[in-house]
Each structure stands twice: as structure tokens, then as C-alpha cells.
Image: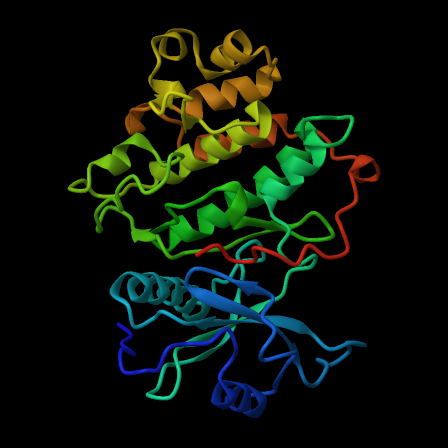
Length: 332
């Protein structure tokens, strides 16, 4: 675990010693005092690989994540866990095209905190939540089913790779699914990840978390990620959270309401908010968002459903992504 409690207060800039050590490893930081993003735990800086790779006409862009709070226990654990996931995939030779890759790492010293170098995804900071909002502002109003299916297939593959290595992501949400210019996705943010059936549930840290996370004495299970995929699907097609606070301040859990339990989640979306969900999507919602993990679809069952219903993606009909969405790169 990292401990840098003796370090002076961190300013919103990359320490010169870090820039120097990155330069020695072949990276050129764009601006050490102008971060792309100021997260709760990390500063994000743009950088370049100094020399183009063989056959490439341009330099490769990367992002540098410098931790400003790795000496504090909560943030230290999250940073360490994310590093463990990256290193596990890398050491096993099982990095995945739909999981963001760590390219390099500077361990902490008495002079600076830890620093990760990750691959860059353009447009910067454009995630699934922004894609959903983009369609809300367009005439379509809702993300086309075929486009969601295109993203979902990639999400399934990424989660499958994590599960193969014994990891449960435990924090899948639209904000943690980055979307690039070619509409390919990268799963990010592994700070809450847990070892399946070994480590305990992280607690219900967010409203979209599966119900079983409330039992912090229970072992985390892969079915949690299946619920979270369903919760993402709910956001995409209901355009709201599966669990939210009502105007009176009370917590309202859609899946825990008698109507949803009896008729299904898709019926609740239709009857309560007047939104008609595609029947195929409704089938998945009803089976992914089951409160009992044993009654939920498995990831394999979800993949079989996706394979049978994915349809064809007509890329020419997709809304173009912005050239740059440089904000909120990493939320943690």
C-alpha cells in the first residue's frame, strides 16, 4: 500500500521530478501545470510518446494519471487495487482491446506520488453517459437499439476477460465506459474491483449498485457485474437511474416495487413514465435486474441473448462524436 504522508500539499500541477522521469522513459508531457482534468483523487495530464512507433506517421497520445492523495488510506486502497488489475492483465498477457491499458508506471518515492501512463482515448472524456445525453438532445431522443447492442457486445467481452482473471469490476456505469471516435469502447476505473468469491462486497456505495452489496459480510460474486450492465441498460432506455431519491427525499428502488416485481421492469417503465421499451431490450432488463443474484442471467446467458438479437449496426446513421470532450476523464 502506498504511503506518502510526509509529502507537502500537492498543487494542481505535475511535479518537475515526475516530468523528468517520464521524459527519461520516452514521454513528453504537454503541460505540467495545466491538467486536462482535476479528479477527486488524480490529476490527468496529456502527453505524447516522443518517438512514433514503427510504421506510424504520428506520435502516440497518452494520458498521465498522477495521484495526489495516494497517501490517504481510502485513496491508497483504490489506487493500489486499480494497479493490481492492470498489472494482472498485463503480466498474464491478457490485456483486452475493450479495457483501457496501462502503458507505464512510476512508483511513489519520498519526492512524489505514484503515476500511471494510460493509453489515450479520443475524443478525450467522451463516455457512454455523454452518448446518451447526445441523443436526448437530438430528434431520436433515445439511443438506437442497434447502437447500444454494438457497445454491449464489447462491454460483455471486456467483463468476460475480467471474470476469467477472477475480478469483479463492481462499478460498471455509463461514466466508466469510454467511447472513441470509431464507437469502440474501453472500460475504465477499477478502484472498486474485487476478487470474485474471495473478497467481501464493497457496500452500496452508489444508488445503481446491486442490492447484495449492502451485505458487506457477503462475498462478491460475478453476478454483480451482470446487474450493473442491466442498470446501465436502464439508464440508456429509461433515461433515469434504477434507484433514485424521490422529491420527498425517500429512496425509490424500481426493482423493489411490487408492480415491477409482478410485471417486470420494462412494464414499470411503460406504466409509470409512459416510455415504451423495445421488447427485446425489455426481456434483458427483466432478467438482468433481478434482485436475487441466483435468478439473474449469467454473463454467458447475456452473451447468448446478445448474439441472437444484436442486429446490424448502420454506422452511417450514428451521430458523430465531438472532436474533443476534454472533461471528466476519470471520476475517482
